[in-house]
Amino acid sequence: MATAVKGVEKAVERRHHEIPPVDDEEQAAGRASRPRGKRRLGPGKAIPFGYLIGPLLLLGVWFWGSAAGWIDPRVLTAPWTVATTAWDLWESGRLGPDLLVSARRFAFGLAFGVGAGLVLALVSGLSRWGEAIVDGPVQIKRSIPNLALLPLLLLWFGIDERMKIITIALGVLIPIYLHTHNGLRSIDGRYAELAETLRLGPAAFIGRVVLPGALPGFFLGLRFAVTASWLSLVVVEQVNATSGIGYMMLLAGTYGQTDVIIVGLVLYGLLGLGSDAIVRIAQRRVLSWRRTLED
Image 1 (cartoon, rainbow, N blue to C red):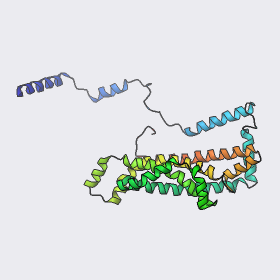
Image 2: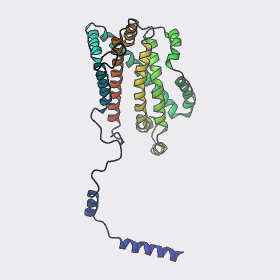
Image 3: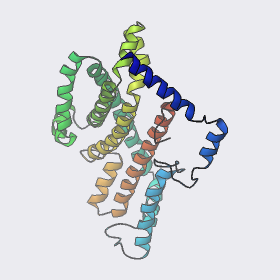
């Protein structure tokens, strides 16, 4: 056996001497000889303000269809009419207060929902007992839409702002919990072993390992939560409300004012697009240490 091993070693050594070494100049020449026009794998370089291209194309189709007479103004008001109506509503003092009320409801509901979802995700993600207690009720709530809870919430909290903010918070809580919990459980177990080896305490472990590891999942959940917040806002502002963009749209529907309804829809869309862009910018800056296809 020893003789056979020595024979293999000598053969490898002879083979090694037969292969000429490659110096740095030859390696550089090899890299330079690669085809320059070959496309790299991945989505390519980021397009400046690329998230605006799709909405602008949609606006162009709307504008073109209305100008060519393909779109009946009784079905979908022309964009220039919508812009004029929005300006008239702003000048008359109707749009500003409703926009401010909707923004306040959105902000409070989002803040409470994110806080509650984050706390529940930490409790469930870092403890088996916490998961056993928390995860089941959250999954039950996930199966019940907010629209089905409205009659009960109206009985409990009435028609004031509490009901609206709680409804929005319940819609926000679910995506924050699900994605943050998944981010926590996806952390490599070797980091926990390393933290135990370094004798990190619970607070240091959460601050140095858990939170950085769960941030990608949290930001993904936050993008879904922002959308859920606006969707819930549309619902609650059309149920026994006396102010807000949804109430303005509901009142316009009663009088057949299609242009005012489209103004409300455009505002919801722009607010949703803008808030999602803010979350994406924050995500890119906070998670700048990651190397992904997004970079």
